[in-house]
Length: 272
Image 1 (cartoon, helix red, strand yellow):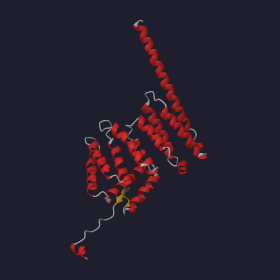
Image 2: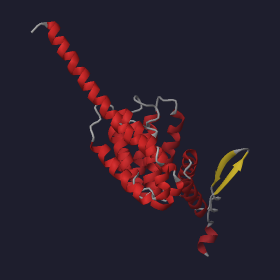
Image 3: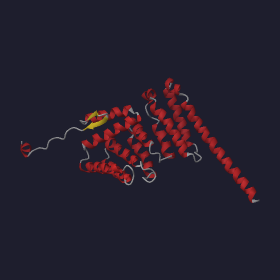
Image 4: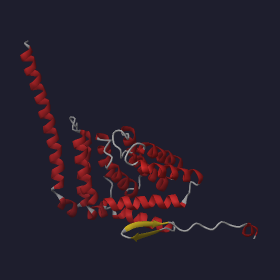
């Protein structure tokens, strides 16, 4: 066999492989596109639409990606955004498909930092499964580093909030905050490092620190506002107020006020 003949066969083999990959990707994208083009189904029969979407996600998870992992992760995330933002349907069916979406996204592209904000909001705060959310976020902490993405510290930050507010896992939260502080070193976000270390220090001294809990719920409130998650935003507001805090707007900026510290008891008061 001549080198020319061998090269021709190799080129044809590569072309066939690429064609199959593109065809497979086109098929998956067509399934995704057809879902986007049928919003009326969610309105008319959201339960049936939910079952069909669950089946489609199962098939997508089992399908080969042919090297288009990031593209499929992005496309799945876009579909999740439509699902997440469909308030009338979510009022009827909830967020039961969020784990399926993010299982696919974090498997295909665990370095997709921006997705973790929605992961935490939809699975931890909407679905009430912070343990599952953290297990999915750990895919990110294993795959990411500040050298890969300077915003990678955010995944540790999201984990710490779930650990403080929903799980009561203070040792885990301290570790997450310390890792977040470590990961901002040498990045444009280095100014946050002392804040993360300070918060970890407060938790070491007082695991039930009310100021830390208020500040954590304030972060959840702001994150929910940024992604249009009104349900989580309202929950955060209620928790802040239950802890004695207040949400105010001063000079066009959101301000969270903590309750004044209780005055220290004097020696005379202690004897009474």
